[in-house]
Length: 354
Ligand code: KG4
Ligand code: ZN
Image (cartoon, rainbow, N blue to C red; front, side, top):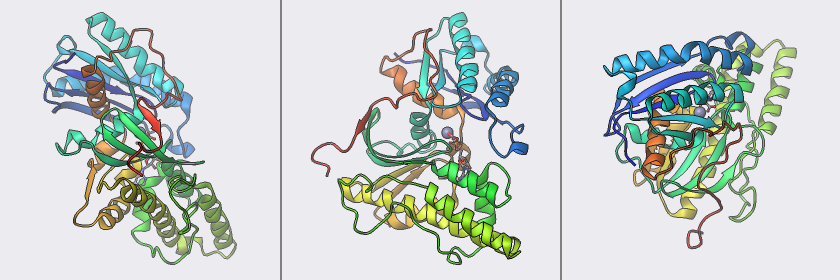
């Protein structure tokens, strides 16, 4: 089944976003509204997120349609994030999409948020298609995948505790930086020396071998604890203000080193030097720079511009198109699931690739 104009809706966390893609997957309308109610709390408050989505969803869709000079009856299909994410927030988008799909009598397609992140780069770069090794790094997830084709996702590694973005957000809070932490750390780190404080690289050792459970997995809670200890001692000495940028830079360097090293292990093992990086943390300039450097001239780094790396409706519409074309429209009783399983996820590499 193929649809002309597809509307994508994203409300899984703190962005209310809608996009319209034309039949050639060109973005003809796109609005991203980032909620600011959470700033004073230093993190997303789920109940407030759901309410803010409810207040904004109609206006965001209207503005998107206006950009495309279109009206709701022109829409041929609706794609919406059904999980993973905050249940109340997800339900706002899903319920809106169901009601409108029913009223317009068009197909509804429930999309997995992390699969949508995989499709973001393809919206801007026609070559951003599998095969590739994918590093998905967001506020809630950290996944290392081997993707031989769309819809087939071999899981190589994941985080054992905090997601990469979560680590950025928690460390930003420790350093007295605003939410979201990732961009704030990147800005602050630009003024600092990444070699000033030697921080641990959890789960990264030279003696690890393929097949061992921690070869690809990552862990960030030990790194966060190391930053807590460091910040406490700097505070005791009254030196936190002068050291803040150095701590931010040293922390960013540790995360980037771990992520880039694990990704390069996947490159070595699969023999594929094409790497796609996606999710909010992929907006990080230092991570992009390091991955590109380690891949070298014969490698290829696929990524979206920062706007499309963060949560947005366009990637949801694009992933929805893929699922629709495979005949995978959803029924109107589809439900939101905070722990929605990644569709097509297979543990480990296929035989012949290790
Ligand atoms: O994908 P995303 O927009 O939402 C989720 O699906 O979670 O990712 C948000 C995460 C936040 O943790 C935020 O701090 C992080 O991405 N992030 C960054 C940067 N921009 C956003 N982390 C590091 N560097 C950045 N420039
Ligand atoms: Zn996301």
